[in-house]
Amino acid sequence: MTEERSESAAGLSFKMGEALLRNGAEIFRVQETMERVARAYDIEEYDVYVLSNAIFANAVENGEKIDTKLKFVPGSTIHFGRIVGINQLSREIVAGKVSVEEAYARLHEIVSIPYTHPIRLDLACAVGSACFSYLFGGTVFDAAAAFICGFVLQVFLNAIDSRTASKFIINLASSAVVAVCAVLLFTVGLGDSLDKIIIGSIIRLVPGVALTTSIRDFLNGDYLSGTIRIIDAFLVGGCIAIGVGAVVMTYISLTGGAPLL
Image (cartoon, rainbow, N blue to C red; front, side, top):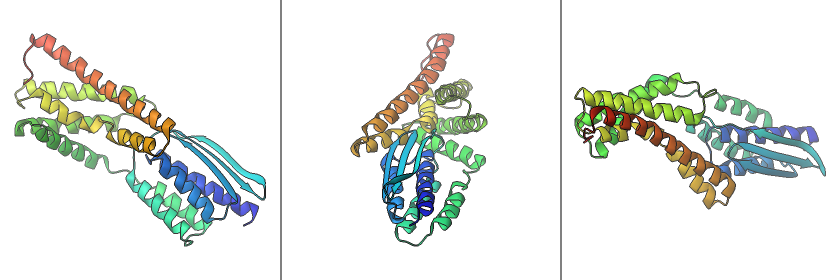
């Protein structure tokens, strides 16, 4: 493979890794995909180091560096469709079915896959909140209240620009919005248990994927990335607790300590 060809292949590998990391893939998956793609295109030496928010890569051909990249990759919304598409593309590359040029075109199509329409997200969040409220021991009326709270929560999240607002502020404000909505519905008589309504509604905010990914990173020996992700998950959980707690404590103080059940 010529030096120009190797440089192009190294760039493809880097872009695939970046797309995986940006859309929520595990560290080991990002690193393994980049290395496999580099080997498939016969790059002589390709060193990769991946963190939860950065990628370092260095390609060597004929004893000389041909491509060295370092890029900060900020976290964004998880998109499993893009991850699945890139995984399939990497398998076809390893099987020798896709040229570098074709792979670039395919990758562009994959990263252009849109997110789910906001209305679908709103309804999915509402239904999920209602189901979890019922599963946690709530009544049908609690589930109905959680349905409304979940819908309001997702509408609020859709309206926030996550590119400019801090993730922790977003979670703090979102959990407070859920709690306020739940308190209002409970006050007017919709729902039997305020705690069941809130628990079902905030499930959308719980960082379950981040926590699971951090554990997988630990099991794969990526201790630094695992630590970063688990700290992030606990901080998000803390923000949710503070947002809900502040609203509930205010409600209790205003109602003279009325029971929540």
